[in-house]
Length: 591
Image (cartoon, rainbow, N blue to C red; front, side):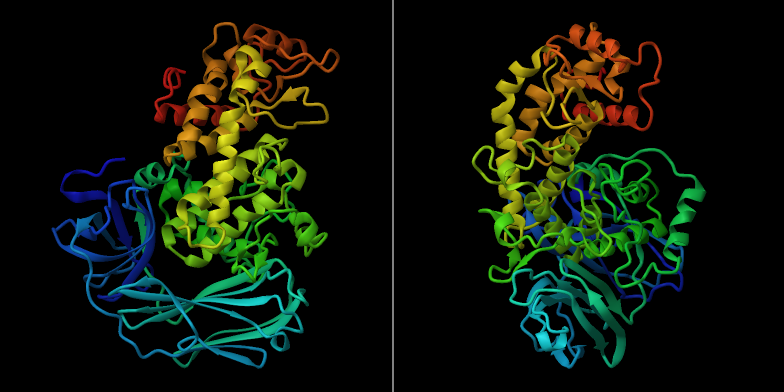
């Protein structure tokens, strides 16, 4: 997307919550920017309808190669009181940067067991720093004597002080240092007191290894809701576009869910499926979770709150492995399976993980909140996508990071989705970003290198990711190719030239050809299965006509109806074509 004349970038509307908000209240959020829209050195304002320009504090978290902001943590101050339900529409635009300094005078102490940490005197590193908001990180190891005898528990707290006089702590307890002498289940109590007010007092009798929990704690009124320009956000970030409308009863279900007993339990899953190998009927799997899609479509406050809650709950998923010596998530090279994976750790305390059916709970919520804790969750998941693959499989190509080789194609799609998103939205100094970027580089380079061999192998209908399906790969699910296409399209939109090359010179031949070829039934483009390898002869159909004949012979063809295209397979195919058309891939728009 290109910014409009006058420095305008995109729209943004602030909506008052019940109880309203005082003049001068600080509003904090995150945002992505297309390359060039917020150049290095440029300031940012929210320009209101009456011409007023509200200065925005923009803490750039990562930049495009050009130096322009890619993502930033933003904050501004309300120009006047905002009543419940009132809308303050504006336009984010380049302008004079916010100026000033944050007042001091707060107190914040965290007590775990008999150990107390003063957050105002502990070593801190800045995340946001400007006239509206100061946010600093405190990271500390909890003594074994305060954690039930284990040495694996960490405190990761983001201390927030704002110009309106309010303070908050994004407090996280992460039991993930898996290679300590006594790593294991932590037992403790936690108490947080900010400015003399107890914001948290919690007994935690069982905090299993590999899991985390956290809350954004403050005595201040909750900040206003933000209505984003989703068209801009989707284009700038590469995420799948969402269109349509939602029935009122669908939107009404989200606050009802948040009011259910147990929603705020310390380790509550908040509707993330604990048995990840499970398939249909799950709202948490797909290119984006159903609740994130609903947020994009509706811009509704209750839906947005639900999305943020689920992103918080993602910390409870036991896929976190912290390397304390390197202050980063574990790098799987070399031979991580022999070194640090405790047998069964990923399938304990009620969870069964599966890379092929993993959700994406944190990317969009982090992008639009700027909460650093959600970036931690995102990066931890991305690194898990690497070490969750068998070591011998990852060695293909020599990088030790190949998460596509011999994988289920849906696993390749979602693993690369997490890796690419984390690499793109995190700065190189963030734990795990370097590994995510190296994995992305290794896999896309390997896929491009494989194109000639796979063209020869697949024949006239080439363009498919080779992977595993069933016991003999005799059938191929085209919808899994659509899954992988959604990841590749997103990466290409973000500027990855290798993903673009893969799509344009290889994958589009199948993804577009299955609809446009005169010698292939277009209804079979979105059939549940395609013939791949003959179970008897082990031969592949090497022409479009042969593929269609094999589909008919094996009962995979829709023939003149749609019996073989239940579920969302048609929608997935259309989404792929729309994404390819956005990229200017020949034939996609016509298909």
